[in-house]
Image (cartoon, rainbow, N blue to C red):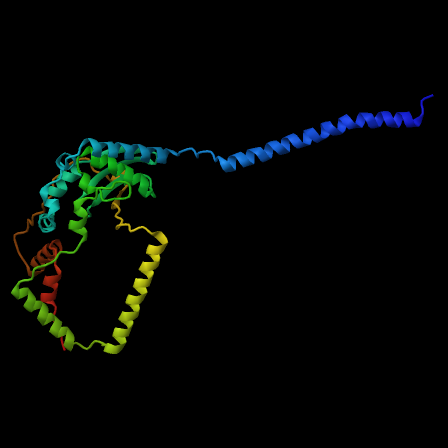
Length: 304
């Protein structure tokens, strides 16, 4: 007869292999899980690019290629008229409602298919930016900037592109239109400004004490200096000013008119005239005029 001790020893021998097998089946997936986690941490996989990122990278590379192969400034800006490089000349030319500059640039339209739908873009000389039509709202700046790169490349007007984040050579139009003009005042203008300042001195405005004003100015200057020094020490980089392009959403695609319709001039067919009609005509003419700060100061009278 088989004794109980023999059966127990036999089972004990059989359990050794089962124990090893069970341990191996538990340790293999655990080690594999740890290995994959460590591998992804040390060598993270590249995130797949979205359609918008692919479109932006494509337009950026094409724009850089355009700049490299057209080194002369005339070739890159052959369609920009010299009026844009003179601020006063441009402002006087745009005072007329039916001016030639706006009409020409409204005809230069770019039809582009993007990951966010179709976009129609043209340059607006009044806003010094890009106007566009699109059925989708909330289009990000990066996508509009990519479309502006293609517009500038297509119509040979690189100086209209103000963004200096990806492109190093800055447009000369930035300094012309962003910085204030240093006016050389004539004698009459100086007299007008002196008279205006004299009237303001006698006006009943609240004036602070000089001691308080000096203390406040010193405190502000000290704070500004400290803030600037802290920023420089933290960043250790002296970066220049950053500029961005201006984009104006003009509406959806059905708001766009493809026909160059001449303006309708309404003529008064009535044979009689009245003071009311003349006043209305003067009001419409006044709204079309652009008033400068100098003209406003001449018309202001301060009663003391």
